[in-house]
Length: 124
Image 1: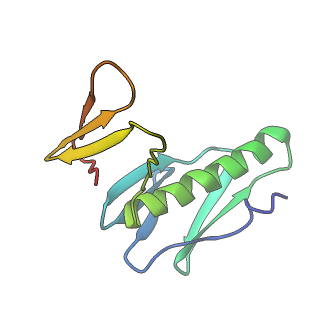
Image 2: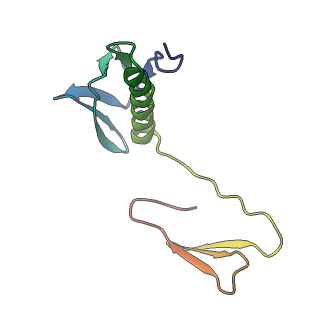
């Protein structure tokens, strides 16, 4: 059995999960996500944690086992903390400037690259 697949996914105090019609619904302060469960695995939510188990030991069930656990763990993290991506700019002549919702990058092109924050995302 997979080492990571058999680990339970701990739900934060501000995150709830429930099974409904073959789908897992995770709700937290950052929103609500819904993921259908695959027929090769079963998901149980109890004692403030989610546990993923597979129904048999076939190759397809083993592969879906790890995938389902990773999807659920990402759902819990996304609805409770959110995700963060860091951009590191190194080198002479490279710059970044933030003005309102626009991020202006000077990356060696003949013109500056201007990126506008998408709806629901924030750049700092």
